[in-house]
Image (cartoon, rainbow, N blue to C red; front, side):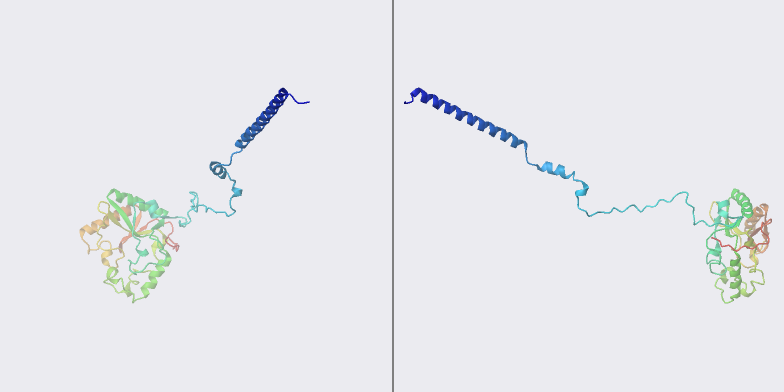
Length: 288
């Protein structure tokens, strides 16, 4: 039986609704799919940089770089000073007792009667027994009050230095220092006149050779002759010097004698402690 027009229209309407519903489902599915895809964004350059800064060191190349440690060494203040020379018991450096004492150690230089550095003098130091140094300080303090420093040419003298003098005295052709130190004497007579001897009081440690320096000018006093000059002009009481030169010698003499030293008549610069602690011992340790 033929279908009525009303039935045909109803059927078309239902088909359209189905199509619409299908489209709505498809559209909804597309929207959901798009939303999911938008949440999975690609890694940006910023993300790559931030991530690379956090790469663990185990991911870096295996080549290692060694940073050298500092080589600076700090010396402990308690570390012993191995360079300091240890003197025998009973001896001291003069400048440790008398800081104002000046030193001109001739036997540590070529400026002496031999013209060479003398055996046993390894440094320009002045060493004395404690007793001699303490007595010398008394004299130095007195002289300082009068406006003078003491200047030391020699103090303790090793026996090996005396032996050097003896060898030099036998070398008669070696006269290079004659004009300054013994112009009026033949070298051959120095031993017999007592200027050179096998033993010296200096080796006992309580004898000192010295002069005076005026504090205000820094100049040595004029004593009429130089240290170690071999001749009558070096004697105490010689008529060969001026009254001013004799006065200068007497300033030194008075201070030294009052402090307990004994003068040597043949040399104005030479003084020995009267009560020396080692009157029979001749030492041979080096000056250094």
